[in-house]
Amino acid sequence: MSSTAMPLLSFNFRVEIDGLTVGAFREVTGLSGDTTMVEYRDGSDAVRSTRKGPGLHSFPNIVLKRGYTTNREMWDWYRNIANGISDKRNGSIFLQNETHQDVMQWDFVNAWIKKIDGPSFNATANEIAVETIELVHEGVSLA
Image (tube, rainbow, N blue to C red):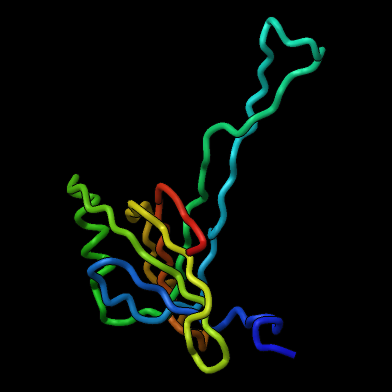
């Protein structure tokens, strides 16, 4: 059986965003797109039904989760947005095989941080502090 026929494991991935050393993430969601359907009918159509075609495309926000570190680059990027500075960036999510070689790539464009959540604290828990970042973007594609 060839290696291309083997299902890829979802835990081997990496994230790159222009100009940032983002580190490792534990979860990425939102790599999808949706196209609205537009119905129309010409007055001269002989067929008594509507035609259907593609309309506008929309993309959900990409949500990134990672263990909290002292790296402040994502917070600095968010500060730019919060201060009214247009700071859109492109990025990629790479799915890797079992030897950590990139085998698939999703690219997103013109992204900016809509929301950033610092960790929750609980003195009775034994958990990693997790940061959540929500990116708005203008498109995602499988490269």
